[in-house]
Amino acid sequence: MDSINTKKVIIVLLEDFLASGLSGAMDLLNTANLVHKYMHKYAPKLFVWEVVSLDSQSVIASNGYSHPVEKLIEQVTSADVIYIPGVSLISEKAISNSLLKNQALYPWLKKQALNNCIITSSCTGSLFLAEAGLLKNKKVTTSWMFSGYFSRHYPDITLLDDEILVDEKSIITSAAASSYQELILTIIGRFAGKELALLVSKYMLIDTNRSSQAAFKVALPSTFDIEDELVTNAVELIRVNLHKSFTINQLAEQLHVSYRTLIRRFQAALSLNIKTYIQNQRVESAKQLFELTQLSVDEIVYKVGYNDVSAFRKLFKKTTNMTPQLYKQKFGVV
Image (tube, rainbow, N blue to C red; front, side):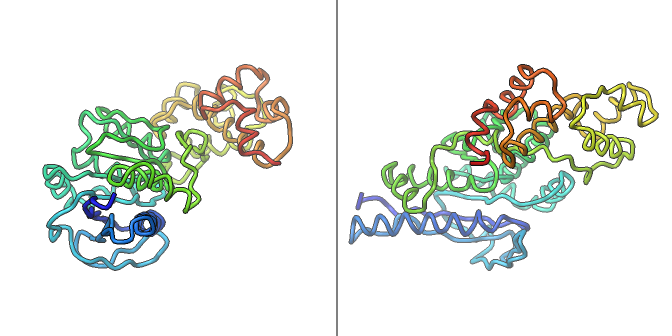
C-alpha cells in the first residue's frame, strides 16, 4: 500500500451547498489518511483536497455558514476526482434557478471529464452533472426529493431513484443528504482498496449495508409550490380526510368542480395523478404511525383509510421496498 500515489480531490462548492456534504467528506478523506499512516508509517498521504468555487469567493451553505475556498475552478490544474456536494433547496423552482445560475460550471465539468477525471456528486449534485450533459448513456441516482423533477427534465437518462449509490466508473452519484458517506467510501475503496474503506467506515461508525433510499422517502403534503388554488384546496382536503375512505368524485363535489376538472388540474399542477398522490399520502401516514405508535399493522391500515389490508400491504411494499412488518421492525417504537 506504500506505493499508492497521492490522489487529488477537487470539491466544488455551489451556493446553498449541504455543509455536512463538505465537512463530512473531508473528515472521511482525512480519516483514510490517518488510518493509512497508522498502518504504514512512512507512506505519503492517500488524499489531498482543494475546495473551489465558480468565482474564488467564499460560498454560503444552506445552514448560513460561509466557507472559504482556495481558488476558482478555472485555476484547477489537475485532479483525480471532482466532487460536487448537493445543494439544499426546498422547491423545484429553486432548483431550476440554481441550475441556471451555475451555468459556468458545465463547460468546466466537460473539460475535466475529457481529462479522465472521475466526476462525482451527492444528493442534488447529479442534477448539475445532467445539465452539463455528462450523464448520456449513464445510470444515475439523486435525492429522492427531486427524483420526479429529474425524470421530467432528463427523460433520456436512466434514473435509479431508489439506489443509495450508482457507480459508473467515470461518473459516481449518490442519493440524498448523508449518502455522501457511501460516495466518499467508494472513492477511498477505488484508490486505496476496499479493506481500508471498510476500516474507515468502522472508525466513523458508518453503516455500509444501506442499499436503498426508498424507505426514507417522505411524501410531504406540501402546498408550497402549488399555484392553482383549486389544487391547494384539494391537497388540504385530502390531508384532513386521510383517515377516512373517500372517492375522487366525493372530493370533486366538496370542491364544487367536476371529476374531470379536478384530475386534469391536479395533474397539471403536480405532474402526478390524484389517485397516486392519495396513495402516497396514505403510505406516508402509515409510516408515521409505525414510527410513533405501537399499533398493529392491521390497525394502522384501517387508520389510514384502507379497508383492504392485503391491497395496502402490496402498495406499501411497492412504495418503500419493505413490507409493513419489516418497516415497523426497523423504524418503529421499541
